[in-house]
Amino acid sequence: GSGLCDEHHYVILGMMARKFEPMGFATFFSMITGMSLPRHHVKAIEEIFTTFDNDEWVGIVIEMFRGSAKTTVENNAFGAWLVGMYPDKTGLIVQANDEIAGNNSSAVAQIVGYTFR
Image (cartoon, rainbow, N blue to C red; front, top):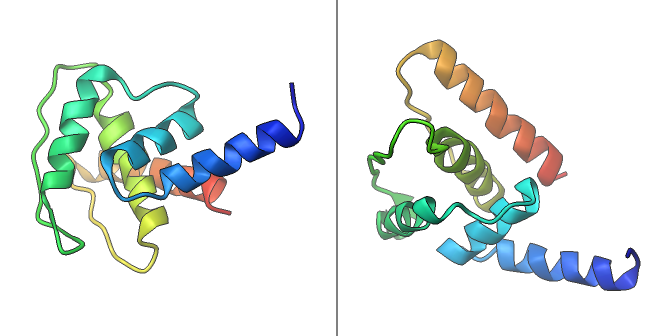
């Protein structure tokens, strides 16, 4: 059903999604997709968090099988979550070519525009 209980639940989820930790991102991912973070991405997200040092991302290479949703999860959703967490910082998406980088940047912008209004 809808109502106050659902609104309260959404507020709690929103608070959880703003925690800078793997579970915070997993909550955000669930909120924007309606799905749980795929199991094979949990370890990758945890590894990403180990590369942060004093709020600065040192970088990481993520390798997974073709069709594993790397772009959707780590580039687009995680990128959008970082923009929401740190709107005053600058990020860089590196891809094989400009067209793919542009497409992913557009996807991040769409998620940010829809989620953080």
